[in-house]
Amino acid sequence: MPSEHNSKPAGRSIVLVNQSSGYLTVDIANAFAAAYERVTLVAGDLRENGRPLDPRVRVRRIAAYDRRSKTRRLLTWLRGTLGILWILLVRERRGEVLYFTNPPMAYLLAGVMRRPFSVVVYDIYPEALASVGIRTGNPLYRWWAARNRRLFRRARCVFTLSESMRVLLERYAAPEKIRVVHNWAALETRTPLPKTDNPFVREHGLEGRFTVLYSGNIGFTHSVEQLVALAARMSGDDRFRFVIVGEGGRKAALQEQARREGLHNCLFLTWQPAATLPHSLAAADVAVVTLSDGASGVSVPSKTYNLMAAGAPLLCIASPQTELSRLVETYDNGRCFRRDDLQGMQDYLEKLASDPARCAELRRNSLRASRDFTPENARIYVSSLY
Image 1 (cartoon, rainbow, N blue to C red):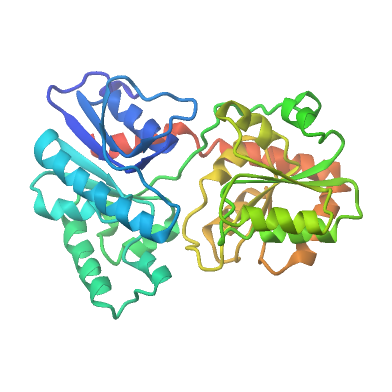
Image 2: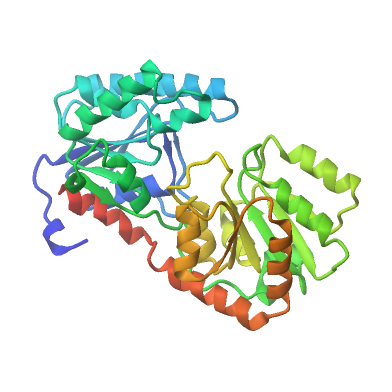
């Protein structure tokens, strides 16, 4: 940390509130632990992914987030919010609060508390409610928007993930209060193993194959079916292997489709252990990132940063008017396609498989880009509030 953070003022304390706390929250909590006297993390589930939580951080548990259905999401959001309220009123009564937007309504609790607070906006509400049919004319939408204007005036800082999100938030918060902090990779290494030395490649018979990798949720909005469609179109070209890693509600149907069509070039795997992640991502000659048509295009899926840290060229399935598309264009580390442009995706993959020099250039560009998205970004939260 910078030298001015080396001596901790007595009594300086902060409570971080995030129901679903992964490596990003852990890195942020650790950055605060290096500067503050007392740091508490209120979390439902805690995933450290290689960088452990600083033992000086006190953890208070609430209900874990359950994403298996809309009903479960809502119920665990409500239970989590009630747990947060109890902890802030009874267990952690002093110090400022840093709310993350999970649960989405958690930061609204700041309206009933007289203590300094800031908000980390990963998803912008009430705008995100449009996905369930709640739009600008709805009373809930209008009420939430009015609360945002009131609360964000009181907030010390409003943090968000991209310039596009900053623009949207300016309808609620003064521009000088908004800080953009880009996410970063979970991976520590930025020197990926060559495929010839990669145990994941050997285990799954990917030697000498041009590997197209998807690693993530396989739900109904993730466009993974486009990879199976590509595998079908390219099944006659034995250079290619399509590797789909993850779980989700769409996986069984896609596996059955691949079996029915005899797609021997398409491999489905379950979630890989954390220790295997650097090897599985480094196995990709091209890695796929998707945004559904209905998804917000103002932020970048967090997996993108891990893929870049692994040096993977990107094939993005998203509209051109997205932050993801702008990132790929800025760093020249891949291409972005609309979900129905299967011919364009096929042409892109075939061209890269025939042009090792261009593929190597894209790999270098991804690694270069990843240097702008490291855990050092967590210190911006501290310097903004310290």
